[in-house]
Image: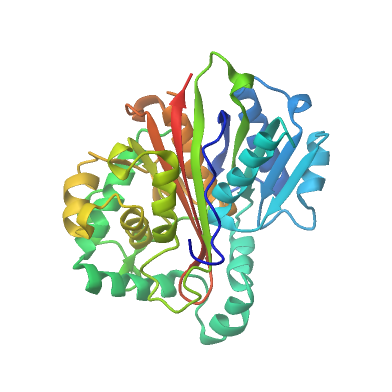
Length: 391
């Protein structure tokens, strides 16, 4: 194993996600909406789904870009939680995997018995503009002075590079976006549910060539949460057992081309630890801030067999033969700030527990990934996890 890598979880001794909740997403939050309000709402929904109350919780983890000046401990106090274990994550789209990895270890070691993990943000226009301008030092000091406000221009350049390297066209990316909108049409929580055609995609206004309107993730206000506990807490009920979680940070230290994510390093130990391979997976949620990054992760995780991405898109994604981003993904459901990765975890949990409504697929194994914390040209953080239906 490479120096500095983060080891995957050893096979857990009966630790599962036993509840999931999502505070409704909105593009235009009502007056008086607050970050702590949507986070608290997601927590309460997840606990209700697990048939638990705040008095059952002794572990808590949170990730939010807009919770400040409060911290995780302040939010826990507002929720009335009395805790033995606490963490605050700062890694945005990768936070779901990071927090889940720590939470499983906490339950295994006895440091906590019931852990709630939550991520989300208030994303009105002014908050969003301030966040993308001050995202980190690389953004504020290097990109903003070049008039590169926000990630669209960076990912336009990366998409151009991927098109050249993989033989992809805008039609290929459009097929992914259209397929995810078809899934979203079955998800009452998605902000965009109107059917999208390939012509709609190709004729949409250009944002940063080759990215059009439907390539760029819409920011929304919202939050997602899960409840993690030993299987004994959910005896006789449907749950999503955590088989493996793997993570990498600063994998290539900005020396790569940006087309290979940290998931390429996660994948071998993820599959080895779980005792499964890519062909065994029934439902997948990959972090999809842009179609190019969804495809990069699917390739790095081994799901795009042979690396032939155009054929993979046409034969498995466009047909929805492989159930990828069944919520609609962030491209259609919306990106709730730091909860982008948690959104995917919640969807996989719902599928494995038979709670996905009209979009339900026959799922025994579910895979989710998180990606993000963009520096100059790539996401510095990558996480992935494999879960199994149980109970």
